[in-house]
Amino acid sequence: MLWAYTKYHALGNDYIVIDPKNLPSPLTTAQVKIICHRNFGVGSDGILLGPLPSKKAAFALRIFNPDGSEAEKSGNGLRIFSRHLWDKKLVRQNEFTVETPGGLVQTKVMERGKIVRVEMGRVSFWSDEIPVTGPRREVINEKIFAGGREFTFCAATIGNPHCVLPLSKISAELARQFGPLLETHPRFPNRINVQFMKVLNRKNIRIEIWERGAGYTLASGSSSSAAAAVAHKLGRCDREISVHMPGGVIAIEIGEVFAIRMTGAVTKVCEGTIAREMFSAAMRAG
Image 1: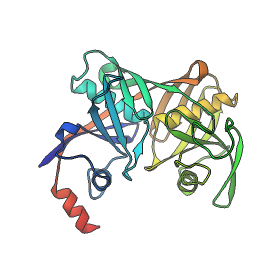
Image 2 (image 1 turned 90 degrees about the vertical axis):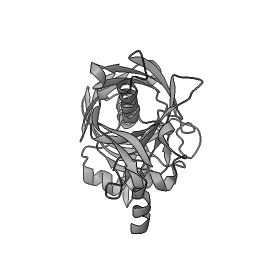
Image 3 (image 1 turned 90 degrees about the horizontal axis):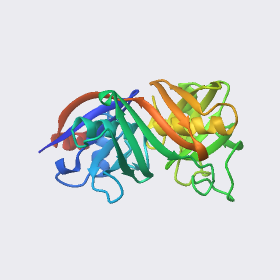
C-alpha cells in the first residue's frame, strides 16, 4: 500500500503533510521516525497530520517531531498546513481557523499560498504556564547552567515552551553544543525549545534554534514569536520585529497583551507516495 504525502518547507524548515484518510492505521512512533529520517525515509523536520475534524475550528491538526513526540504548536507547520489546505481547495476563503493542541489559530493565505499570516496567540512568561520549575513568577533574566557555562535566559510559551538566551554572539555551533543540554534541563519538565538570540537593533533580531524533538533547525515560527516577544519584553525592540534565521526572515507583530501575528513564506517541494517497503527495510537496517 502506498501512502500519499505532500512536502513543503517554510524557510528551510520542512514538513510532510499526510491526510489521515490515506493511512491504513494510525501513525506509530516508529513510522514517524522512519518517514522523517533523511537517509532511510523521505526526510523532514516533522509530520503534519491533517485535516482532522474539529468542533472549534474549520480543521484540526496534529504535529509530530522527528523523534515521534508531538508538538503543541508550530508556526512554520501552521503556515505549511494552511498552504496545503489552500492548494487542495479544502477551504473556500483565504482566512480560516485551525485547532492545535496548543490552541486555536487564525490563518490568512496570501499571494496564492506563497505567503501565510498566522495569529499565533498570546505569549505568556509565567512559569506555571510554560512550565518552568519553582514558584509562580514571570521567568525573566534568570540564570541557568549547562555544559559548564552560565547563561541568562527568559522563558515563554505561545502554546509550546521556549527558552530564549540573549547573547552578544551566536552561532550554529553554539546552538548545537548547548541546545540539547538546555532542551532536557531539569528546570523544564516538558523539555523546551531553545533560541540563542542577538538583538541587532530596535526592529531586527537574529536567532539560532534548537528545536525540541527535532534538533538544530534553520527556521521556526513559534521560536521567532517567542524570541521577538522576549526582545520586546526586555525593552530592546519595538512591536514590529524582523526575525533573521539561517533559513530566512519572518515578520512578527506584537499586539496588546503580547498577542503575536507572524507572516512568512511557504514553498511547495513535491508530492509523492510512501511505500510500506520503506518501513521494513529501515527496521532491518536498524
